[in-house]
Image 1 (spheres, rainbow, N blue to C red):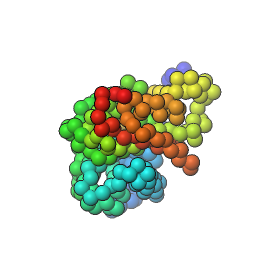
Image 2: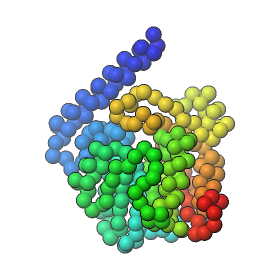
Image 3: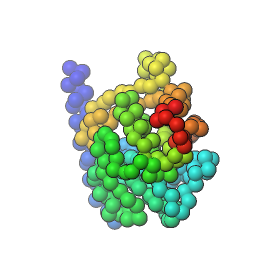
Length: 262
């Protein structure tokens, strides 16, 4: 009975989302923002203000982490937004750094199509669920991933981290976000214990079926897990807690030489 009730609830929820997106686009047509459904896939919200505010805030975080790691978004730099969605973050960076060459990729082909049509300054492509990406080894100076590893299972995050390391230049900077302490408040006591024990917690849900890929769920990490995990592949790993947000930011540099993994 509980399974049936959950199935009905999820169906009604998804129907409600699609209906709200339809009306939002109807009322707000003429906006230069992506359609409501594409915005929802990024943040589970159709709010235009939230979309704009978060995108601008994420761009500032990228700029701050680059500055702190002496990896500025200088003219001619090659920068990849891995999991760019419909351009929430990259659109701000392209405006602020017009001489930087920005790339964006995502599994959401509809979002990529929108970016190609409306964000012409960038180089956008739809990628597969698993590597490789169609970029040469050592192509990028900076790669950033917002709200990507917060959704991948442990096996998928490992193969993608290896791939991002491959296409990053020696000395290049990787920036990722992970769920911070604020995002764990709604977890059950059992889930919190599991997270504390293993350092990673991956939970699946059928709630967003049809909106995001079936393998794309929700993942939490401990700070110690992320620091150790990145340190196996990158040097100078740092972790910054974002006090007012649900996600924290970690960064590391690809070593200049040595074995594939340190």
